Image (cartoon, rainbow, N blue to C red; front, side, top):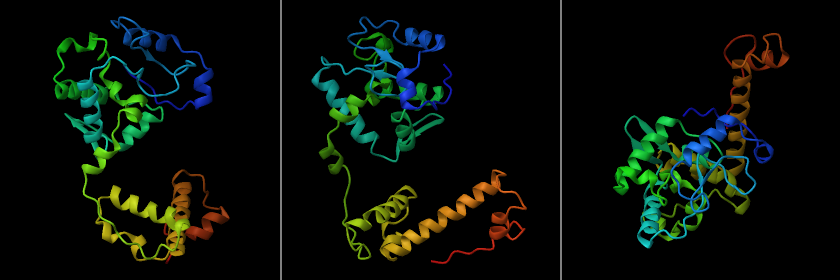
Length: 250
């Protein structure tokens, strides 16, 4: 099943009618589920949906205690890592999860690999796709599971935490720019003690970020051919060559 990238705004999703292809897809996905009231899959466009991703699945109230425990365990162990899942020839990371939760769709190969990985991890039988409680195993990423089935305390127990003093932060209003640099350091897997925020004053960090955005923006305009060579802005920045004339020092 090939899904085009979703670029429709949320208000448009609420109003629009589903296409015939989507209706057929919805019918196929719900095939074999005994009752749509117990466990149904909805596509964007229904008023009572309230959440967007590949498969929106209602919470199953009669799931056993052990099933809920394993679902919670899975989320705690997998979603809190930078690489959420690594399966054969496919990788799902935090950005994919964020994309999924914001209404995006994963590649079919990734979904298929994820389903196979979850089936093996939970040791589900081959016919589990026809079982009401496990009709679509990607229900692990439904909003109800992410919110009500997540034990935050177990996340803290899974990691070692270290307080890092940040003397350049003068008050709570500096938190935003410092948090940005710490997050970037973590995503780039750099040593936490090498974060720029530990060595530079807040106003310098903001100036550096602004300079970076300006440079990237001008480079982007040039690459997208939206800045002509006779444009005064082009001459100011590039001086008629491909080498920027402005050097940012901060």
